[in-house]
Length: 360
Image (cartoon, rainbow, N blue to C red):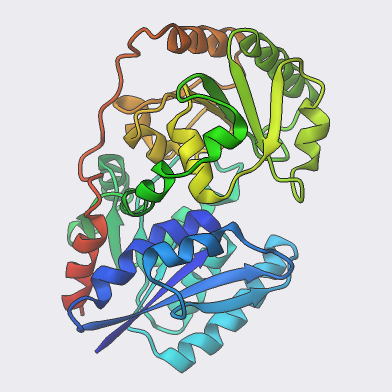
């Protein structure tokens, strides 16, 4: 029986690999081993998602003392080496592009264990953040490249990867969305927040802002104040880690700063938003599939399909562009983009499982 280790750290990585567990285990040919990296002191919103995927009692948890990216990666490599020696996996599947993903990739590669790349070939061509570098490293050593959109195929071929290693399967994050959307639809979070569906906008910001400048912060304050004149604007904030957001935007008239909901409740909030304004690409896929306009405060994205046919627009930190697009959305006029990329159908994990069952 093959053993396949699924590595995840945090919500994003977990939702990349969690949907693989059931189809891999289904016919008894594969033993999937889900591994969740948990930073010390974090309660972890990811834990609330575990039951939805049938993983209670099945997760291996790897504790991690918080530190710099280098120190975290080094400690994780030691932990993963011990884990891989114990399990002797046939494949390692890192979820996401974070410290855990890169540590698992490097460790498996040095131990001669084949690595599987999910979302292979995604490129933003912005190397100012670590994600892009990690994507390149993971793809460079992977034995199999599972591609989630057409841009990934083109990028990998242009980078010289062999066609037979590139397999177009779709987006596993959408499989996870399909799994949890029913629970999200039953959530009472909108009543708790006192808002009605499509009668509010949601702002999701990372801390620090990227790029972090006083000019961009002041611009956002003006933008949010303008939008709040015509519609309710929610800014979810984690009191434990986003104190800087409270300080930066707490005085914006009309802006409602609310406690960040758990992942299922947050999904309901995003699904029912008139639009989402964000500086992160974390929810681009889900928002496109849920047909929610997304205004992204960036110059580039690793998922061009969400720009070309989906609901995503890159508005950078352009005050006029943001306000014009927000106005069109709130007026109810059609935006002209609402298609779902090919194979984002909730069956990507099944396609991947079928390949891994027979891959050598």
